[in-house]
Amino acid sequence: MSSATTRTLLTIVTEAALEVALGEDVERLGAHGYTVADVRGKGSRGYRGVGWEESRNIRMDIVCDRATAETIAEHVRSHYYDNYAMVLFMNEVEVLRPQKF
Image (tube, rainbow, N blue to C red):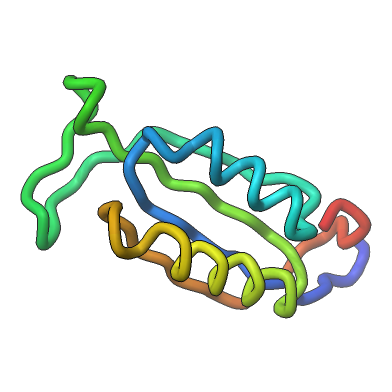
């Protein structure tokens, strides 16, 4: 088995209305791709379900190098934090196909 390489996983949980714009931002800022899933949960803005289109949330996972993750996170904070429900977090992860990221 090949050895693992460290990358950064940036996760954005936010309103589904931002999916297209965020996807464009992420690619423009240097990530090679992303994964999106519908999610639900409860936080400071109450319960967010998947049943009603206007209240859906998504989780966008981006695996990339640390500098790209920080660039994307700063862009998202400065452009979306004030007007959308959103949380971001980063973790170091090991990937087995580093050329993909």
